[in-house]
Amino acid sequence: MKIICIGRNYRKHAEEMAQDVPAQPIFFMKPETALIKAGLPFFYPSFSRQVHYEAELVIRINRTGKNIQERFAHRYYDSVAAGFDFTARDLQKECISSGKPWEIAKAFDGSAAHSDFHPIGGLEDPGNIRFSLKKNGLLVQQGHSADMVFGFDALIAHVSRYVTLKIGDLLFTGTPAGVGPVEVDDKLELFLEDKLVFTLKVK
Ligand code: ZN
Image (cartoon, rainbow, N blue to C red; front, side, top):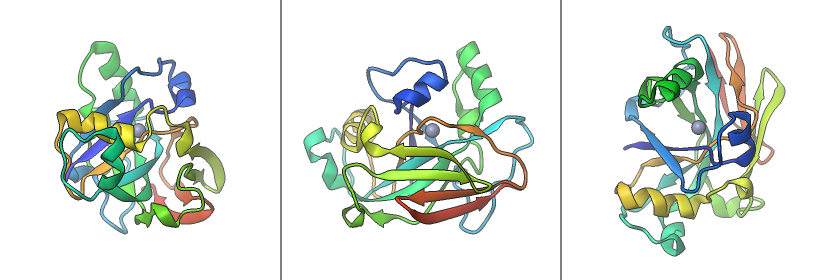
């Protein structure tokens, strides 16, 4: 299983990061070891002083495919989760400014987590999936899938030009505006539509 993450896929998040909206999707990967095991907290890593939450919609690939055309991409997933792409923002800034790859900032152990998967067809509005994040009870991020620069199908088409997608692969589809720091003892709650689907403590 591999984890593929999309960068700058919401206009307002690109703006808050002072970056351009890309003409093509940007993706990077995390290893399987990045995923937090069920029931465990997020352990704040010793090598960063500025870890940010990024709440994202996650889709799970359910068929193997390569060079998938956008019009057929909907056949490759049928469920969605809400998840976290934790980012060591201080290390990422350093990587970007010195032209280095992002792995130490994005692929570390515990840098990914997600709720259970929910059938997309069972959601209120499958064409515009709403999700949000509360930190210590306060709403900090809210996203709508229709605001993505590249939708699920375009992302699958793009990524699968380069990388074969296999059953069980996870696609983190980018974060909306409102990213910010986490601190030890924070409680993070992810919502799909109005339903609380995932709670994570920071330790
Ligand atoms: Zn992200």
